[in-house]
Amino acid sequence: MTIERNSKVSKPKEALSCCGILQAFSMDLPLAANLFLLLSAPFVGSFLDLLCERWPRAEPFLLGRSRCDHCGHDLKWRDLIPVASWIIAGGRCRYCGARVPGRHPIVEISALAIAIWSQAALPIQIAWIGMIFGWVLLALALIDLRSLWLPNALTLPLGLAGLLVAWVIAPERELDHVIGAILGYAMLVAIAFFYRRYRGREGLGEGDPRLFGALGAWVGWQGLGTVLLYAGIAGLLSLLIQARMGRTVELTTRLSFGPYLCLGGWLTWLYGPLYLE
Image (cartoon, rainbow, N blue to C red; front, side):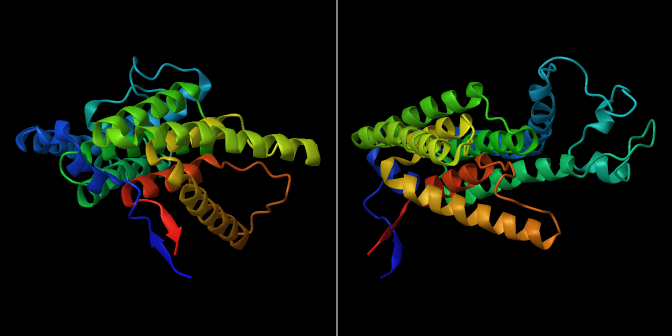
């Protein structure tokens, strides 16, 4: 028994040849868009970090000045250069000396890594789609990690976008993605129902089925198993690392499942589902 990637399921790279709409684009437009997004990636990461901090606290994140969380001082442009400002200031606020968490440059670098990964893994015509998809998944993963919340305002549009992208790239397989969205949502709703019924407590958050359904819209029903496989492996590795670091993890410990689903969905969309031969 071997595990291989399913050649029968459309991946972005393969399905591109089926789509006359994308073939009609000139090379210049996708190249310019990809270059712009690549250069913007660290700034996108900075915004996502701000979004994930303020949105769960119902604080404005589109308007208003960035400020130090410790002293409240408004930050100037030289304080907001991704990664560089943090390094130059020695990881501290220039105004009060308070330590600035290292998660800020990590998120900025993660957004840049997603952009580079998309450029390397996808055809130039759809690499920009991969970047945006990856950034939305990064935002969802961060919000769930920090607040145990998957906002409908992100998961629902993500699912609609997945159906639209599938229709543009491979319209003949659109039904697979519609089924994937419905089946993905129904699967985790059913798992949550039976877990609650037989264990007497919640096993999944309300946002997890919606996120899985949104990912099904991107990868199709054939990719759902691969998403869960990747998510399960990543989750298990995370638990082992936490246990190794001395953190107590029990059966009743609340853990974020969204980040692992996001990783599984991202890898499955880039490289296609696995199947047993």
